[in-house]
Length: 115
Image 1 (cartoon, rainbow, N blue to C red):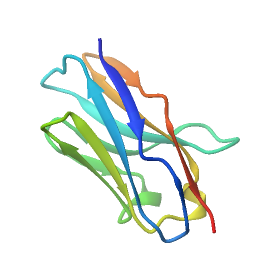
Image 2 (spheres, rainbow, N blue to C red):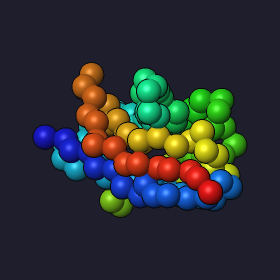
Image 3 (cartoon, rainbow, N blue to C red):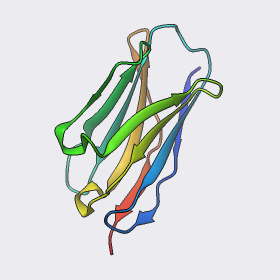
């Protein structure tokens, strides 16, 4: 059974940085993908960053150059480094781990960007 747990959300001032973590436990296939999504109040959940098992990454235009996704191979933890945060980045951030045609979601972590 795969479990996904996000952490690292916080209140941060505009221009600040945060690093979110996505810990994946359980048996992991050799082919997988990790995606970060976010959901702001009154908006649908949307994808913002992606990395596959080959290390290929993609980002939505609104976060390109500010956010980066990486992995700690020793701990099966994926990170979302978020720099130059803006008020419009305020949302609940979710990690989705996909493998064998199934997706596993974490519970989300709140990021609030406000002065």
